[in-house]
Length: 222
View 1 (cartoon, rainbow, N blue to C red):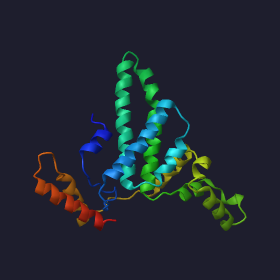
View 2 (view 1 turned 90 degrees about the horizontal axis):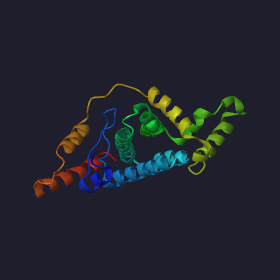
View 3 (view 1 turned 30 degrees about the horizontal axis):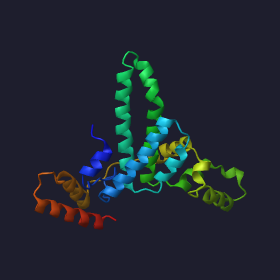
View 4 (view 1 turned 60 degrees about the vertical axis):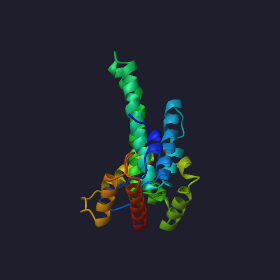
């Protein structure tokens, strides 16, 4: 399996459409690099069994949709590779191998769901507000003041754990579920761009035209 870092050096942009069928900007190399680097933080934490998951999850709120997509993709590729490696070493004991990767699987699933919910519209205030009990406040204004303070980027990861973010993300994505809308013209163009991404043997003129089309497309879906 080709590693995502190598793939970034090799590939150009590729469009991705949202789950609801609406158009979004084409992923750039910067988006992919940010997503991979953030995923590498998770991998390093998992390998060292660090306890800084909320800090990493907190960063997801400030990334582009494309960076979050790449973040999840990189993590899942790494997890698949790790499963193969562990099973190869512990082939005699599949149960033991399963336990070794179990915590990684749970954490990757949680972070993927959090990323999905953020893309769907969940923000820090949504998470904090869902954790608060109105009965503990004299007024709505008092509660909202507490929400605003707790949701500040530098305070949020200290006040909210990954498990809490994940629980809210599950509810948020579930409540926002709806049928897929028909593709718009921009979405159809996005799929055309993706299907015709230049390869190594592509004519330079066609590759230049493709690049111009990507730039035009991105200008339409900002």
